[in-house]
Amino acid sequence: MVQVPQRTALSGPALIRLLARLTDLDVPESSQSLSDRLSQWLGWTDAIALSAALAGSTPAVNASVRASGSAEDKECVRVRSSLASMITSDPTFAPARQRRFAQAQRETALVETTSDYAVFRQRYLSLQQSMETGVGNLRGHLRTLLAARTPASARLAVVDAAMERALGPRERTLLAAVPELLGGHFERLHRADQAARANAEAQGETVTATPGGAWLDVFRHDARSVLLAELDVRFQPAEGLLAALRAS
Image 1 (cartoon, one colour):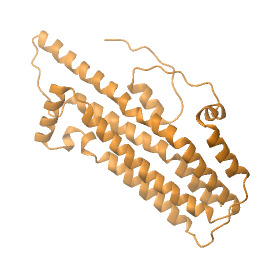
Image 2 (cartoon, rainbow, N blue to C red):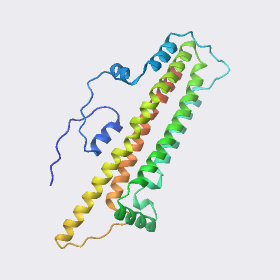
Image 3 (cartoon, rainbow, N blue to C red):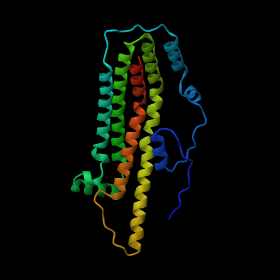
Image 4 (cartoon, one colour):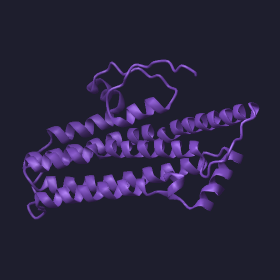
């Protein structure tokens, strides 16, 4: 059995830990503080916008926009549950037992003959877009509610909007790399399956085809876990706004 080199355990969000486990990259944790890293991500125009949001006049409170705490919580739960269900029920990342037998066989034949990751990559990107839209709309809604509470809450809403504009492009760039990293995982699983089959055939063993491909089921499970972990990361700003609403 091939011995896998031990890596330094990473802390941080589940998304980072999952990607570190699934890829062959050994990236050490950054020694930079959050403030140092943000200073590299923000341009001078972003800094001006944030400074204006923090030091500007206190925003006027729109008292006509109100919502009960339970309504805010329910909306967050609804959006998160909807996005999570979209991921877990997506047929592209469902295991073979959840798909029709004939469909699973066709997909396995396609992947085995073309080694084509494009189908999975395109679907992952589509789900990312749905998450970005859903969480972004929720975040804007929560900011509107927050701006109607107190002057301090209204300022926080302005700062959050400025942070979203400043860090949004960086977030999209970083998260766009996730399906590329999963592509490497896909190829490694595929090569390992082919090597195992070739070795079994060389030893005269009978190799039976598994409908849907056992290695594909492993990949689908891993990709779905990464998608759910990415949803957790994307939802953090909305959770922060919700916490501010509860406290205001």
